[in-house]
Image 1 (cartoon, rainbow, N blue to C red):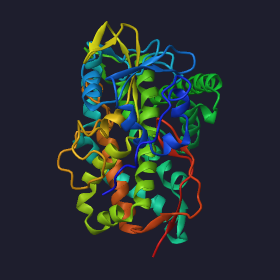
Image 2: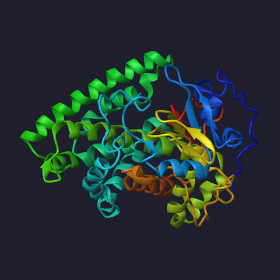
Image 3: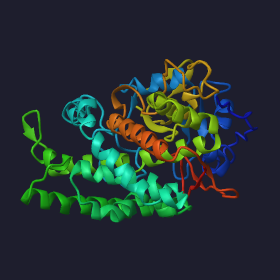
Image 4: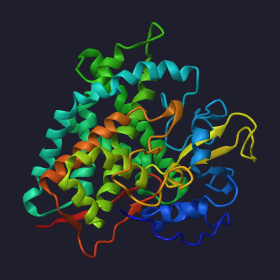
Length: 409
């Protein structure tokens, strides 16, 4: 059981707690210490400043975050002002599509990612995990990020959708450009890099779809070429907009989760030993660490109309930042939220979002995380972060650039 450290004092000035705070290493390493103070006071704040945008309205409490996520008629996910920033020219399908069109895409895509379909993939995922572990198990150490957390879900994704695994490095290059602007710290330059990476993404999938039109395969992309919505085949543009979402969701969020999970387990041997002693606890471990770590710290929305949340005014067109990480550690929404409990029977976390936009790939992500924890701890039950290592974290989509682990015993 692990409790959060005491919350620090936060400067809530526009120059302090705004964008600069979320680029800060201390926040990225352990945002829970900040979330408690962020939840204090009014239900929302309207002074979150991101360069180039007007101030965003910020929600941090479990009740309020859940309300925003479950009311798309009030809080839109539609692509547009305040919803860009990842290099795409058009809405990501179905993430940035509002009802009623949203439903037709989910009806099409949900069956591909249903638990029963994902279960068929488990053997291949486990085999991949062990192939990666084979490469370093006898060395007594590894860079967990480079050697496992990145290639594991990314290779699994390529196999699932039916793209050549030889393209992994190119995919990772595109993904890093879209998600992190190729490491550029200047906001405007990072935005330019995302646009450039987005162009590469569209071009890659255009060529891949051209090839699959000529030679169908067994993967998901081939199935999408023959899929229909309302009796009509998907257009090439619709498939590209689905693919753009896939490359972000399939190549980054599980990597982020694995980094967060293994830093926690390396630093808390009592939690790690619990897995070794009873592997049956792994599904609960996955849910609890998703809640505790919340690798995707927040999501964006735009107010579709004038409204209010428990007296907090929200105006049509306002940009909203919804902190699921803060909601997941809110004691008013989750009992004993300030500690890690692998025996938690009810876990109302929103690490995968909520409402109609709940993560399309959540069942795939859960499968990959369960398999990774099971196979890793079966073979490497004891490990630690290399003494003296200085971990460099990325904010919001929380990951570690390099995680050097030493195997113990």
